[in-house]
Length: 457
Image (tube, rainbow, N blue to C red; front, side, top):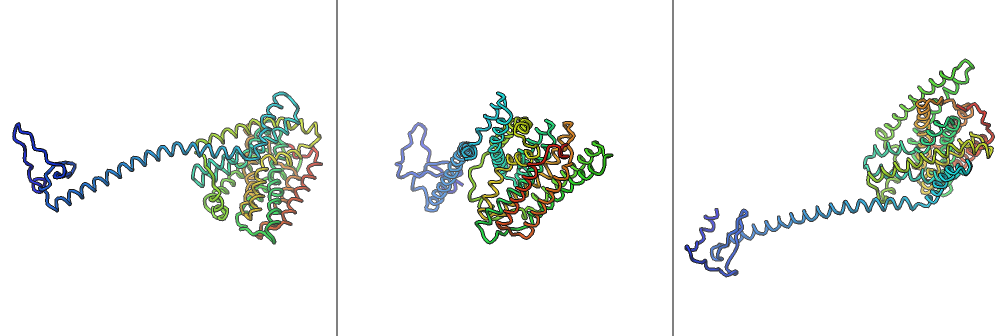
């Protein structure tokens, strides 16, 4: 093709130097990667256009290749450097939360326990330190869930670690043989979320948004129905234990443990319903939009997992000191184990949920507020309670589901009261006040409940 288009260029004779053609009279033809210098007069107009077009195409291709290489190198450097910046910014935002000032209780509690400063001082120092640790544990779980970018796995993580503090305290109390404290603390967590947290949310939201707040009731009613199922699972062993003196401890333990297994299966079915088959009824689109607008820095999966593991170990360590100091607190202050378990210990795990639920209700997001309060109660009843019974089985502690007549009646009345409020999809400040008043009445009851209550394991 070159010969047909351009002909053969004249070759210099042997030994003779080629005459140099001026640069202005020479064109360089580049075709298919070959380059030849030809006198300007050797080209036709058509050939000149072909040559110039090929040169332009090749220049464009080279420019694109260089741009792609440059862009790739910049992106690689940006990703490595920017990821670490995001991790540091996210960690800084978590560390600068105002509630973290209470973390002073962590080293103080360890110091009190190690130097034997007394069970009362140890209890209140660890109690104070666990409140911000519970908040950080929830934040680390959220960071890991967002980093995984999988809604189902994120939901499972939140469902599992949402009550991690209660589960850790439960394990420590079971190992220490404080079975009455375990039962009371789990009853208290359900009551605290249903009556105090939900009541404060309805009260504050109702004061700002009059005459009432409206919400879709399908999701809350599913949670309340699951709570009724949990109460049924607790009521049957309690009734079984009080049918006569001929009921042995081994028979009661067998009934409780089998019930715990099936309640845990029911919780798995509830998760499938919530996270897979009917995810839309548990979602508030307005809240999702606001969350996207307020979304901050997100940690990498490795950083979030490391933070979650570190905080979990710290919670486990402090919880052990807290549980070991309960007997001393009860003895020195004259408090009953029932009051400590039902009123005091739930504050540790529910304080941050309490603040979040009230804030969301104040922002007119009652659906999310209800799901925080009632959903947490559902997790306690269907996950943590069976987990406690099965954990006792593993470590050889006779923990059963006999919650006593008082505990069952209080739970049943509380869930029924919440059911009557959420069933119409509306709430106001008076309904919130009623729930808080009910919690005060429960507190008065357990203040005077002696430790000889048959609720002990």
